[in-house]
Amino acid sequence: MKRAAAVAAATAALFATPAGSPTAAGRPVTIDSYGFWSLTRLGYGPLVLKENPKTAKSQVAIPFRLPPGAKEGPGHWYVIHLHFRVEVRPDSLPGEFNVAADTDRRTCASIIFTVVKKGRQRIVTSDALGLVNGVERIRGPQLVREIRFENFLVTHGIRPGPNVLTFELTSNAIPMVREVRIFADSGIELARGGPPNVAVAATVREHTVHAGETFHLDVSLTRRSGLAIPRVVLRIHAPAGTIGGAMVRRLRWGSRAHARISFRLRALQAGRVPLAVRADTNGFPSDQLVLYVDRSRR
Image (cartoon, rainbow, N blue to C red):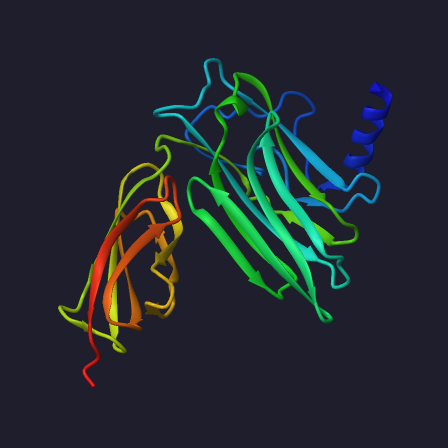
């Protein structure tokens, strides 16, 4: 059994190609100060994962060290930054594949791709969930995708001394993926700020809204504490058939404490309409209000 496991691990490693390796033949780099520790800073270059036709899994491991007493909590937060490009084969079979990262076998990143056939075309959906940017879902015919993902490392994936950051590609059908290239600006950040704490407030700009007319829903976001949020998705929820227009907006936020965005919507019928606005970030903060729609002016 041990020999079979060793052979499987060696086979998986054959399909992971590191473009760089630690400069010294000995000790891995120690993450011992605040800031961003990219693969380059850890002594590596970009990495390439290719499909393994024997096990449907390929992975590459990046050893690193943490100082004595290292743990995750207030003032010491470890964040994975994953930047990669995936190329789906034009002749891909329908199915799912997963690009993931873990530290010491504790998953901290998982981006699931679903491929379906639509005639001669492949439609690819990527689905990611993290404590920084929340839910990120992209669907379309593009076979080449560049993804940036941030999330906090799992508490039990951090320990003093030797640690291992592992990148992995798994799939439930072959062939699907031509390659996954993990860029050298991926890595681990040691930050003072923890998971973001965000407040959402929504107001209707117009004093009176009539059925059949447009109105504006103004949304303000406040980051009370925690890490900056590079981008956030906002979603409006309302009973079916009551509101029309784009109910999902993406906002580039960054390091600002406050951000604002407006939705241009249409009231489809008169009456009382409960609305909820949710931000797809840590804790899924939201705000709720009731819109009273008057009858049409006609």
